[in-house]
Image (tube, rainbow, N blue to C red; front, side, top):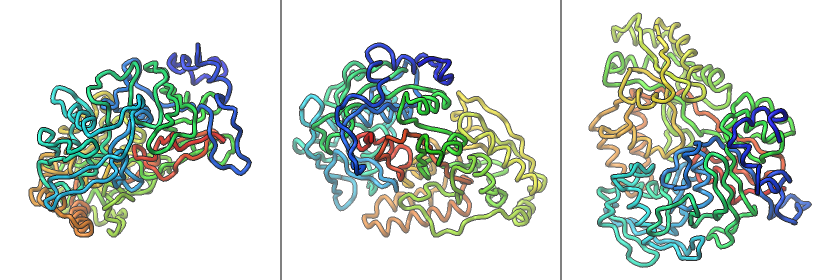
Length: 520
């Protein structure tokens, strides 16, 4: 393999993955097993699958509590387990937790662990779980799941047996299983502090080698509680540029390429050389209006902006058609999503009338955007042109890729925004309550906060869903998120790769689920 044949693979990190000891396996197709594919296409065991992800350079770590990139999450999922994870509809599914049960007031939960062992053969215990959660919650550290674990009183929580835990919560929390499934809430052995040399988890693969910014190799763990993977090994290869991942896939250097762009997908879909997998509803695409300042402190102006948007034009232009239109609410297709609300369509006459009522004729507003996420700059340009038809002048301001997310949290009035998959409840609690730490729309209403607390105090799921429905109707009418679309997450695989789940938004249980994949 050289730069002339594969011009995209110029990063030293990727090339290093196929040198030295790794070369023999990496350059012999899917070697490592003498088993052959079954004639009927049924799952078969054996082989090494090589998966290309964008990485984080020399600072990469296998510490699962520090996972922030998709590559980190995929590696953590292979090595470690969580108590729960999210299904395709973003409802919590048991993993290391065999079951959970609340008390009548929803502020104490009993969690029973299934019988599982770490890679060194030691059982996964309640003390391991409590150690892991207390480590994540350490005020001196910046671990990813810290905010998600906030409802738990970890000082009061205790092990009631080797595999049973009583979690004491600070307040009633009907959606407590979402906490157990939180991004980064992995269980590690008690007292574990080092993870890059020889990490021990309870996941479906065990550690073989790790070169930060280059590659990681893991081998099948035969004693995994959910059954041993079909693959012998999984190798995670770093290729930061999309062109590098595509060329590696086309050239046979990898069998799985994460995060492809819509243009690549269109060029190869149905072409026969590689398979394109679209993970629907993976990323909300929106404009964020700050509701605490002019002009968006007037709900008539916010409604006008809802009606200015031609959502299909935004999906076609900014996402190259790789997605579906939104309806100004987060979580399309997810548990509790208010799918009964009518689909909003562009209505420029009504938008002009609302602006006139609000005294905002000839409105001028600045839209902050950045190349920090795919489609942001395109969406800003398209929406600027749509707004002009309603008499609104939008000045598009380009921001720094490095500081965009912190810049737009409190600054400006209108900005481009996106979000990955999370439960509707988590979106509300993290972004739409008065004390939410990432409240970019500055939506602060005590009666809305009270509805959230009512939902969290309601045991009956149907009654709880009705409360979430009321909250979403309010947001649909006068909220600050103009949700115009939901982007597909696009993955490419070789035709030999089977078992990749197609109904799994990025960061859910069945995304990057390499323990269920096989090589035909």
